[in-house]
Length: 187
Image (tube, rainbow, N blue to C red):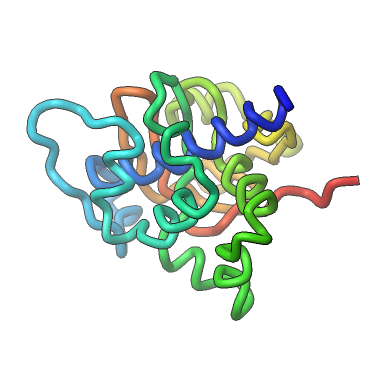
């Protein structure tokens, strides 16, 4: 029960961070913002949830966070690092996958996937580049699984997904990614 609540909170936080980060963020690379809309902040940072809610490029993620019941988790104090897939990233999944995951009967699976996009702590891209320098480095995710972190041509890769923008938030950071991270199958 305690682990399940932690996972739910983590997924909610990750989703929230992703949504908030996208709307307030700026790309660290001039080519990294392709297809991502950045919304100017009103001189005060927003939390991850507010950033995600304000992003037209993360509507699928926001819908998933809401369906998984994780909205409140992402509004928590944090800090959280959220790897937020864009709508285009969700569109790369096999046909029908998103619709299936949004069904009430798949809520636990959806939470597991969303929590796999969240890390407790504020891991900027600079920290990721300096701390995870090997080919087999792993990062512990909020769902209890681990994901691979690597560098490719100076870009941080998370389980094969590229960080295309980073957006600081009041309760962490959102890294916009070009691919949905799928956790390993539970044994």
